[in-house]
Amino acid sequence: MTEQPEQIQQMGPRTSEHDKLNPFEGTFSTVVKLWMGPGEPMTSTGTMVNDWVLGGRYLRQAFTGDPVDGPYQPFEGIGFWGYSGTSKKYQGYWIDNASTWMQLETGSVDASGKIWTMKSRFPNPADGKPMNKRSVITLHDNDHHLMESFFTVEGGEEVKSMEISYTRKS
Image (cartoon, rainbow, N blue to C red; front, side, top):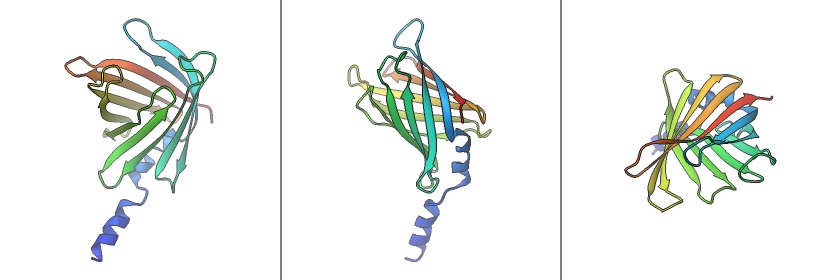
């Protein structure tokens, strides 16, 4: 019985895996490209503010789209990103005012510590059939990173749906 509380305590503290997310803390200006079908993407801008919460275990994300140029007016989203000591995976959670589903992603970082691949599966909003999402977050340096999202419907090919370029403001 005495081992169980110790094992639980080992799952709770912040780790070096959390530290890999430190470059994402801060305020970033964004350029968002959104592909709704073939052709050129819609482009908009916004601001992402990321800060550590709950003892540095979770990176809280708050996104606000610029009201003059976005497809969803005014666009707002919030999320959390962290590392699970239990599953040994990165986990992300995102909600926004452009949809009513809660997006949950799980993934890992590559050996360089600069490229995260996050995956999720959920019903396609268009027809309810299963759909896969893959997000790739690439850390270029402490002031720049890129997030790309790809969707795959059952029996279909993977399609790029979104790209967000982040540049540090502060």
